[in-house]
Image (cartoon, rainbow, N blue to C red; front, side, top):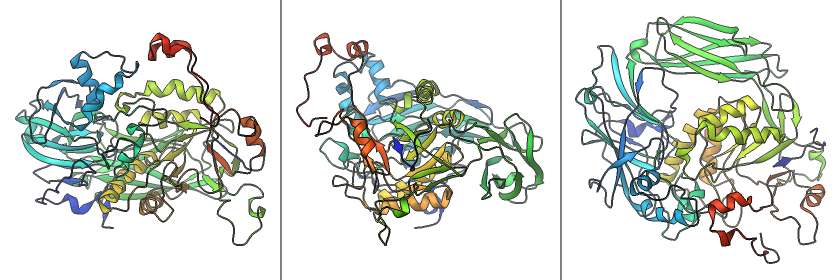
Amino acid sequence: MCARDGCTDPSGGEIQDGIPQAHQSAGQAVPKIRHGHRLGFSVFSLTLGRFRVPVPVTAPSLFPSLPLSWQVGPADQPDVPPERLVPATVPGAVQLDWARAEGWPEDWHYGDRFRRFDDLEDRWWTYRTTLPALSAGPEERLVFVCGGVDYACTVRLGGLEVHRQEGMFTPFELDVTEQAAAGAVLEIVVHPAPKASPRPGREQAAHSVKPAVSYGWDWHPRLIPLGIWRETRLERRPTARLIDAELRYRLDEDLSAADLDIDIRTTPEAVGREASWSLLGPGGESVAGESFRIQSTATRLNARLASPRLWWPQGHGDQPLHTFRAELAGESAAITQRLGFRRIRLVMHEGGWREPADFPKSRSHPPITLEVNGRRIFAKGSNFVSTDVFPGATTAETYTPLLKLAREAHFNLLRVWGGSPVPKDAFYDQCDELGLLVWQEFPLSCNCYPDDPDYLAVLDRESRSIIRRLRRHPCLALWCGGNELFNVWSGMTDQSLPLRLLNRNCYDLDPQTPFLPTAPVDGMGHGDYRFRDEQGREIHQTFARSRHTAYTEFGVSGPPPAHMRRRLKTPPAVLPAPPRPPGGT
């Protein structure tokens, strides 16, 4: 990916926490679910006793917690017990658990072994665990926390349905204090993969917020993962506690100081207690903070920070990271947040207002040059796609070698491609540390996503969860609605309601980060994917003559090394492939 800047490369209803509030009342009728096409429900929850669902962000546990031991098994119909249960790895995917139990070859990448998973995507999968028989103290609660289920699920506790949800990016939690004391059984029933049409292909993802790449791509097999793909745990929490805390900031125009906004939410039991927040510099030194008495469950505090150390993309400066901390007086648990101070804008490239000189200004020349802390940056990098067919199997160690390679290649920008899942937190943490900017796309790609209210309700909640989780990261350079949405095979425009909704949510929750409706957008280039064009010119000769404002995707496919081909194919297939026909890719 590259973006030019005229210089050479120097080297509807009330929404809270992303949840429609109408779905949070007790006794509401269970929405009817339509299977076979898209799932006809949004977030649904029952307030029974002390249940609380969902939550906007799942962070590492602040309180004593226990891991849970899971089993999983399939059924062909809803509300039918699984035919048998096998050990489950969480986070993970039902396909991997079933393959292990059935004794299928571990290396499912080999040849066409992945096709053995096809029949598993249309079944109902029940995860089951027995809560440990624990008792809570008089000022404690026991809470089950789930970071995310791919893709839609029904949750039952002690045989009673307590929660339904569509969408893999919104975590949820349940107060299970009374049920845990009795050793109740907790079940998460994962629904069949959503399919907007019976014909296999990426179009099946068009009515869901599920990454389209799972339905088959030119470089990715059709294999639709299902299951609990984020961490689960049982937490012992005090009733008087902080729910969440976040520091947001606005830099002065001359970057000499920053206005700080500190938002803290607490349980009602914490009102009247003493609390404090602090901001530590990169070396651990205190640079700001105060103590205060909690007056209500929602508190907004303000402060002023002079001369903040600025965060820069690699090649332009250092990456100093500060630590924000909030805590109740006398409690050991504290909410922490890492952040970096920087200002990112999209501006017109040099001379852009004069080429062409038409009035009104052509939409083929939008602002697309990145300006970081007042300095124009020559953006150079790559698409970043899913690192594993099963995103639940991805760990922090998965990202580390890839991001180090990107830094060593002098990249300063990674475009998280809209066909793939939004990466886990470790990806963004490492980009913060390495100075790699992130162009973040929402999981929409190459489809005409509908203006349907059911779809929009899910997209609304999922996008708000994504924005809240990622907006604190200094590496976040811009939001983008998705991949290749303005073209003949997608048919969307900037008037399409899904893109208007995403733009609104980004403005509401992260107004200082730029937003683009899709990539490529007017004026950008996308491709080519061959060594030479039709005139025989080398690909880099083509780029040198280009007048595009940016290239958001290009590259030349090549064969993997022989040792990798031997891992994937039988020996005859390791021989060189025949040449492509003229014009082939």
